[in-house]
Length: 137
Length: 189
Image (tube, rainbow over all chains, first blue to last red; front, side, top):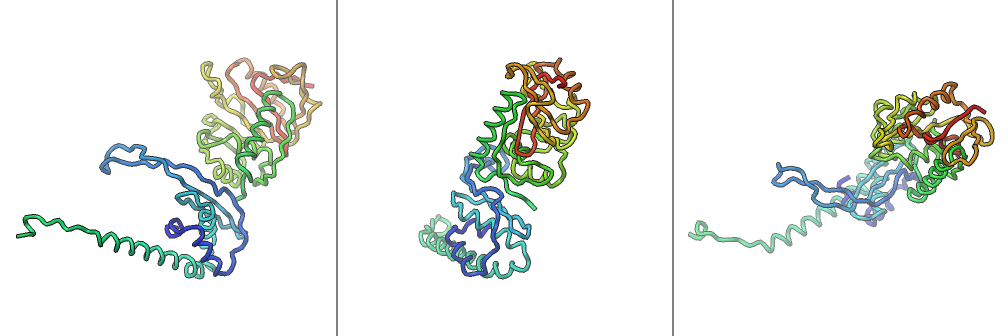
């Protein structure tokens, strides 16, 4: 679910197109966009306060076999929310799970890991070493 | 298996709200809904539409319609489920309704805290049956409520003394709704 929440709708659709088509699904709710209140605590142990609101899109779908999938994703990408919910439902089916994990989830996870690493490398290149009296001696 | 709610949550809820408003303003007049809902048994399309329109996270609901209907309502309305009718803002009755006296009546300062009973009945027919009079009715409206228990009219009459405290009723059958606000008098036809 974390992988689907971070992947774009187009990317999920592109990977889904390579697999055996999923059965038609029914939209139970949404996709619809709304706001959720983020709560924070100062210093980790202070009183809870409202930090800000965040745009979230949610969707729930059901498959003919009765499996229900839910997805809440950040942003306004309705296609992403619907496909993530659809995959949540389809992945509950043991017969489909392995193929879907291999064809959709694994490549998306690998792409995200690559992007994270590239970002980390870029950030590492700008690292500044502060020399203190102790290290200079 | 979970079933979908409104196809267009905004417009469908608005048109249903309009129908509830008309029904409340003209007690005993039967309003038709054009709802395409297919709710789980034992809910009728009109009952489900009224629930989706009125009930939300701030209104505790008490219901006796079975597990499947309860799951459906909780999923689509996001409402807390009250343990007893006395704690509910909306009470859904699909068979015999709970005793009117056991529902929240509100207070003289806050009569709006009185519960609303959403009552699914077997049939609603205008033009015969009970004689209704009171605010919103010029002379009298007539309404036959299929499956209303014997003692309901007497219980209703007994609650009228407490005005402005009281309970409002929305009657649902198939695709039709009608309302009995707390101000309405019911006489046998």
